[in-house]
Amino acid sequence: MEVGKAAEGFRADMAHIGKSVVIKGQLSGSEDLYLDGEVEGQIELNGNSLTIGPNGRIRANIHAREVVVHGRLDGNIVALERVELKQSSVLNGDVVARRILIEDGAFLKGSVDIQKDSAKPEVKRESGVTAAAVVAPVAAVGASPIPHNSQGSLLDAKK
Image (cartoon, rainbow, N blue to C red; front, side):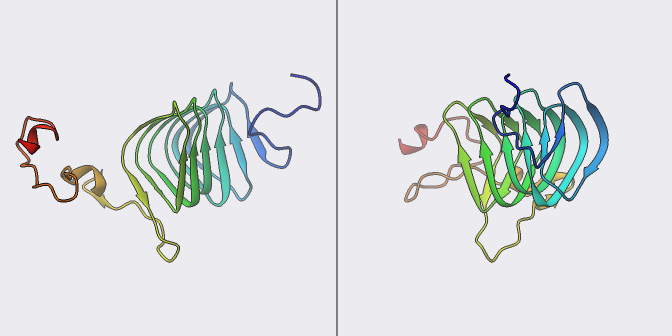
């Protein structure tokens, strides 16, 4: 990288945690954060943005204004504004936000809950499991509901 050239997603006015840094516990702050290392625990940046770099390996629940993911995240995201999953991202967890952008090639395993402007984003919990994770699958509009014990696919339900 040339001197004076910033890495993609990195701005000079945000805090930067490099790829060799490992944090276990709660990470909170009142400025934007670029995270390219490892974090295990909780990340609280309620009024600020978090960018997870391509080397980022996060095992944490995140609360922030905006979240951009280039690396790997195992945990839930609650964003006041938007979540962006870049092509190289891997997300295993639920997303609650007003807006979401998922690039072609990004991996997402979890639920997405888009909030209206008047609603305050919040992940609902029941016995440590996200409420969205315990909701039964829903068939297409106009189709009959699929029983919970069905072993077939949605295509089998049309027979």
